[in-house]
Structures are given as C-alpha cells and as structure tokens.
Length: 116
Image (cartoon, rainbow, N blue to C red; front, side, top):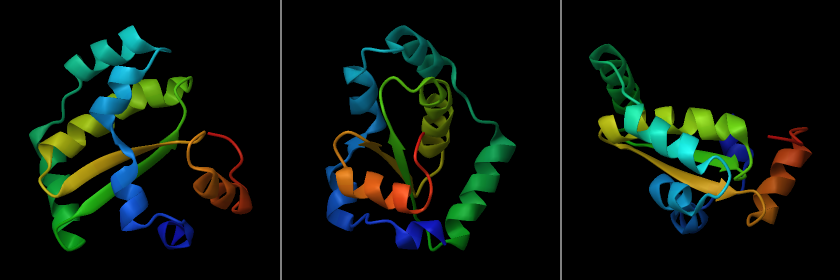
C-alpha cells in the first residue's frame, strides 16, 4: 500500500496546512479556486458511500495531498475533495506543499512519481 511507504507521521500530518488556509494563501488560480469552493457539492448518495468507507476504515480517513500552488489539476479538483471531507464525519484533509516537504517529495520520487 502506497501510504505505508510514505514518511507521513502524525506530527508531519498535523503540521501541514488545512485546505482552507492553503487556498487563502494561493496566488495562482485564486479566483478559480474561490469560485469552485463556493460551488462544490456532494450528493447524498456519494456522502453515504464515503461515510461507509470511513466506517470500514475505523471511523477516520486522513486525506494527504501533495501539490504546489501552480498546479491547475489541484486547483480544479481539491474544491471537490474539500466538499467530500466537509460532508463526511471522520474525514480530514491536509495539504503538503512539495516545496516545503523535501522528505515526502523524495519518497514520491523513489516510487517513480516525479511530477504532480
């Protein structure tokens, strides 16, 4: 499992930014992200499916995202992930900026993942 091979400790997870704080500091894609965060919704069926997944995994799922501000894929997709996390008890999300987490970036590179 990929997660087990990454150097994310409880301390490093807690030190990463939550998405709201990360999005507020963004310069690139700022208006797009702001608009998408206002519009992102999750259906009741999807919420129930994610809730069942959380329960299957012991009542908590910690979503870790490694990205960088200029990434347009993150700009368009993270507002949707944020909507899921907000709608489902037991889920949370932290953002790891690849420029600030060298060890995590190196771990991805070691797995052959060299870009985001």
